[in-house]
Length: 253
Image 1 (cartoon, helix red, strand yellow):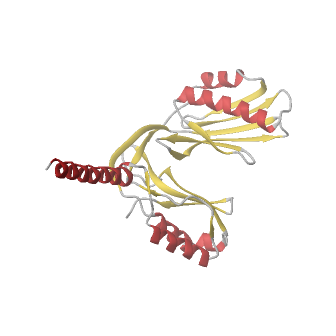
Image 2: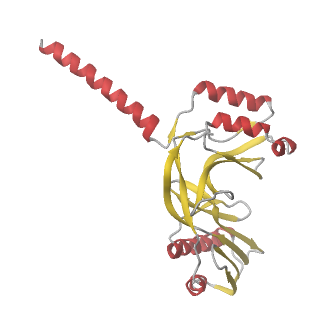
Image 3: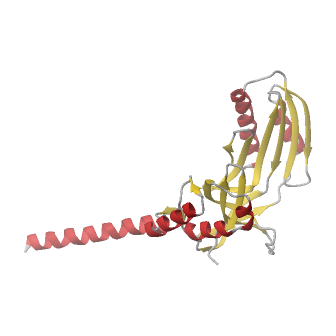
């Protein structure tokens, strides 16, 4: 009798453990596995359309909108940041709201890694001043930082830095303060359906893309959002041929 009870207890424990793992992976995780048949089908369709997929293919759990508000940088506080570094000829233009432009020169020519270190330090201080979370996303020919919240980039919030002759620096910042997530969660469109829509886009066809370099979920402020507050919605960002960008709605309509 004791053996039977122990056996039944073990079976019940294994059942509850498997149920817990299934729920954890498929419901509570931000990412979960895409159905293997759908994944094979869309990759095969891409190949037939002469498209190589060189990125991660992930499926996302339901998401909410991101609330944002206008933000104005304080001119004096911002200029102090640049004065903390060994630079000269600072030309700073702060807009009434949502950003600034700044040009300055290094006192001597520096290597790319040294310039990047200075830019990283400046951005870190801008993050502290504005309570943003600008994170470096790419730095092939210039440095681009995007504001990140809960693991997702808000593409409208960015710091774009270009440098010339290893001395002249031009910085452009656009920023709306993120107030967190609002509203109900909505289902995210499956990646294979998004890629199918991507294949059919006229501008994509005309550019004859060959390689998809990046496929990820980001947030963008929608121009047609008609509410009492600004909001950003999840979008799929597809970068192809290393230079072209395409945004597609992520919510399942």
